[in-house]
Length: 133
Image 1: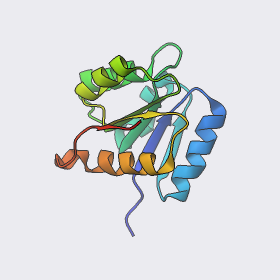
Image 2: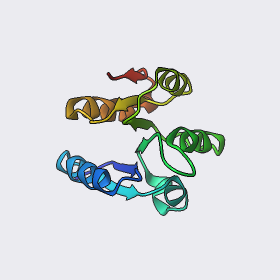
Image 3: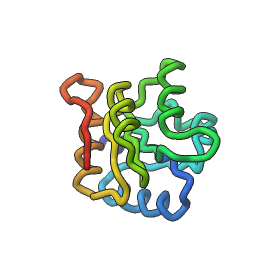
Image 4: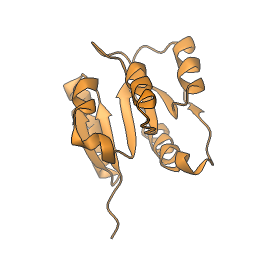
């Protein structure tokens, strides 16, 4: 039986991390959680992450900066950004830079599932970036 893809979650809110972990595991994914971008970048999970889900607004390094850091170091991990503070300019910029999805909190499960599927297929070049309102 194939191993479930690893979804790494970078989120500074502990309660949100815990609820996302429960949800994604119930959907059959392996999950690792990190409270900061630095913790993710320093982890062994970096090399095996199939999809990254990260909050945009976090202290020190935000989610878009994390994505840009990954790209600049040659790591093209399909990334889903999420936020409680949507901004159309940030959304447009993130999607134009290659982020797979931009989700608004509170997350709707069907939108998250669609974005995860898109992210997992993104290496095949068959899917486009998704705006979810």
